[in-house]
Length: 220
Image 1: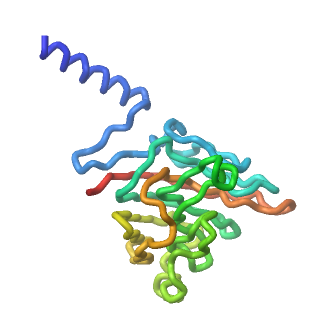
Image 2: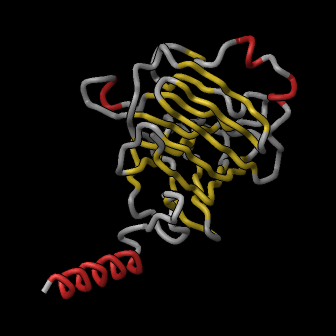
Image 3: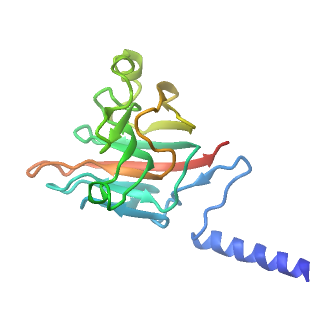
């Protein structure tokens, strides 16, 4: 009976994974947050930008006059390592939210939390306090480093790595160390991952940002 139950449980797990309802972890604990085919497991919050799947990537497209939009994981994460690749139009500012939240009691549900910057202006990989009232969480001194400013490549796929553990948040862009932050301002220790399409004014755009190979493993 025990063997039969275990066999049935294994069959159910395999069926769910095959259907895309569950994404399996590998031996090192890495999980694909995006299955390359659908936006299952993600929910849009704020704004009217659009998100679609194209050629194995999440594509976010601006909608003029919209505030910031976010495609957010349905699950929260605290301490983790996150990797992804991203390509963004030169004129668009974007980012990836970590340990973030959207609650009605705070700014009418506006997404808030630490944001890993995506931009072509030299700020890529630094940490911004999205809707926290803090401005940049990364220091002015850190953001003045020319080597870090040059890490992001225009018009190319850029590889990001983010390590969040306790109040430490570290980032790498194309293997270049960028942020090394002791987060004493955000007050966020856990929350969703969010893909931002920045708001744009009327008469501008449209612009796009693309993410692929979004993987995460929880750490202790």
